[in-house]
Image (cartoon, rainbow, N blue to C red; front, side, top):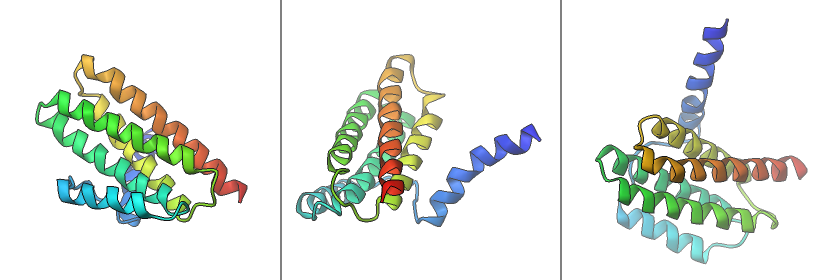
Amino acid sequence: MRFVAIVAVIVLPASLAGAHGIDNRVPDARELANLEARAATASPSEQPYIYAQLVRSMTEVATAEFQAGEAQKASVSLKAAQGYASRIQMSLFRDARKLKNAEILIRHAAFRLRELLTGAPLEERPTLEATIQQLNQVEAEMMMQVFHH
């Protein structure tokens, strides 16, 4: 019974990701620039979802950078993800669209970073842990908004 629970925890986020069209593909610079431009011009109610897409994208970039042995670049990408997560927090007081979808993206990003944490160099773990903690807080705040409305 315990084995089934552990497998469910590992498999569930991946199945949720697939069900919501989340892939683990690393976006290129053009895709990131397009998302940033969309976020800058989006209505306040649409911004949390676009920023969640940016958090997920930067998570994939950081993962690829860690795997390539580029820990400094990965740290910069994680700081960018933290910045986008902060923007989500600031915009949660507005009536946001796609809030549940944004929450799923944030949950997936946090899951990917927890996977990355196990093999990360010791000097990079504080940045990873801080990002994960912030994403968990953002996710909790998003869930409160979802259930509040």
